[in-house]
Length: 240
Image (tube, rainbow, N blue to C red; front, side, top):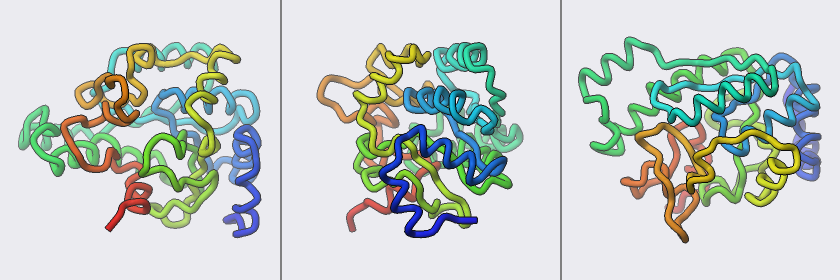
């Protein structure tokens, strides 16, 4: 049962841990944490282990992730002992895409990059989301202008009948790292090399001093820095 307007409003004052617990109690087996093993996702994994250890967790392996991300996946598996379901892109679709457009098609055009994201991320996410009534993500308002309007609990505009839960929506970057240090949460070593946002290896670079936090993602593009998983958030804040 979807929360009422009044309940959604009241959730904005809840702490991140309270939101995670509320999600687990509200949706039971119909909610899952989606993790890409970024700093925010590691904070949420730590919270899930503490307050809702039975919550489902899944991740998307695009086949082009940095080695540092794979090392963190192994480390987190040992540390938290949470069963993380891994979803891969459809092999035949990847094969067709690469044979038609080339292995690094994403550099050719925005459309080609979005096609790659669709095949490697969006379609697997659809399978991971099958049967869910809600998903927990690490989105924060401070991350970008495209995410500035994110609420802690909201209806997912891209997925009818599904709730998007963002317990860290009002957290600052400093709060994220304070939590990581306080609880000794493992994190991707690329963060120590000026990678605030980490995706696929060919599509992610370190940022320079003064650059936007998302500047290292698809740096050759000037359009919205989203892959399609949270595209509606970008559209909601885009100016005409």
